[in-house]
Every structure is written in C-alpha cells, then in structure tokens.
Image 1 (tube, rainbow, N blue to C red):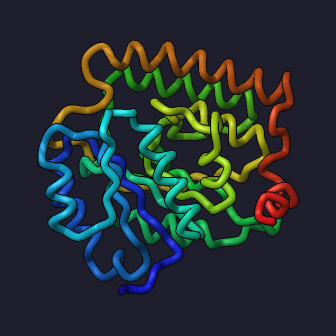
Image 2: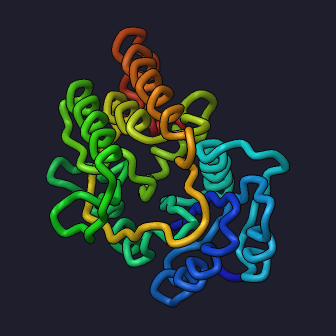
Length: 263
C-alpha cells in the first residue's frame, strides 16, 4: 500500500466523462502525485465518469442520488477528517482549474504570516494581478461585483474572486465545514467566504491559472443562474444574521476553539 500524503485533492464530478480523464492524467504527474492523494466524489453521474475514475485506480465515492455540489464536497471533508488528512484542496473535474495551482496553494497553506497564523482557506483567484486571462460575460461581471460588494460590506475584506471553486483548506477549516449546517449543500461560494471571515478564520487569496470549460454542461446552465443568484443573496443574509445577530459559533476560527475540538 502506498503511503498516505498529508494533502487530499477532492474533485466533485457530475457527468464529466469527457473532461475528467485529462485532469486525472495531469494529477498523476510526479509533481502532483508526490504530494497529494486524490478523492473523486461522483455525484450520481449518468455517464461513464464512474468507470473512468475506477480505471485510473483513484479513491472514488459514488452517490446513489444527485445530492449537489456542496453535499459532494462536504462528504469529501468527512472522508478527509476520518483519514486524518492535514490539508484539502478542492478543484473541479471539468478542466477549468489548472493543476499547476496545486503546489502553490499547498505551499501557501503551510506558510505562516506576519501575525504568526497559517491560512485556514486559500482561494485561487481568476482576477488578481498574476492570474491568467479568464474572459467572462457582462452578466457574470455584474454578479461578481455584487458579491464583492456584499463581502466588503459584511466583513470589510476585498475578495477578487468571490465564486472560485479552487480552494485550499486547513484541517481546522474542513473540520468546521464537515459538520451539520456548516456548509451550503448546493452553492458554497461567497456565502461561505463571508461565514468563515465573520467566524474568525484566516482567508487568503492568490493568483491562479484557469481555463474555460471545453465540453460538457456547467452546473450554472439554463435557468440555474437565476436560482443561484436568489439563493446566494438570501444565504448571505442568513449567514450574517446567524453570526452577527445570533452569535452562533462566533469565534470558531480562533486557535483555542480548534484545539478544544481536537481533544
């Protein structure tokens, strides 16, 4: 049996048979395979995603029913906790997230800042200086601007890419996410960034290399973007009310709280 690494890459996948194999080949290159294990969360795909992953021999969890992107990630976090991983990097299976970002995010997670703390969450951003060119539609630009403003108003932080799915998490962060009602089961985006900032988790952002999807259907296709926008706005309002007004889990990002959780 191969020795378990301290880093786990979690990839939710839904009907990605045309994209995921190329991503797996990239992840199997020595510069990635030497530092990370791979877990694919197959969210009840109706195509051959399941068999493609099995052929590559990576750890695979297949849902009987489609539970959604957030639920797939949360189950992955529970797996990481059970297997005692120290870090998690979550990335998409459609080829949009270049694997060259993984060593950079991993390095940043292990880098202590001037305040003596390590990052709890490292966001891979499409829109920072040093990021690759990533063209987006006018509608998406307006949505990103709205979410940036909501994050700024509620936390005081400016986040360049409020909907990035490429993220690195410390054990403290994914331990919190793994618990009931701590993570959005469908669209964990700006709402979760706001939640973690308000709770005192340390969130950092670094430039990333990303590509547009080449084949397949995005989870934001059809009428889903409209549903997404409504759900996200109300979710953000709920998160702010929960943390700022009800004081639920206030200070959960503090080191002493995390140490108590580990006992």
